[in-house]
Image (spheres, rainbow, N blue to C red):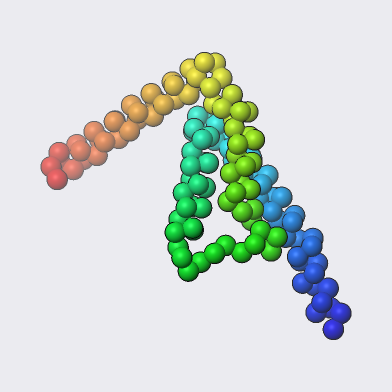
Length: 126
């Protein structure tokens, strides 16, 4: 009987908060890595805002209360993104944004070349 009481309590009081902490850490690392790789870190907040809006527009489903969830709630995540954004944007725009500008131009050329190669392979017709 005690086991059936303490196991759920252990999960609720110990495991779930740590799981949420790990998710927050993963979000932070992801935003930093994305900005270092020249992806606009502001996109992360837009994605989670849209997910929140989609969830709010689905009248039948409500997310569980955060304290019984394995993941932070959308509002919590959005607040953290605001806290991390100055550092992420500084990384994204370092060197006056030249590093990322060069990478974006190289990727644009690579996409153009890939499209040309695809068109040539397909004989130019559709």
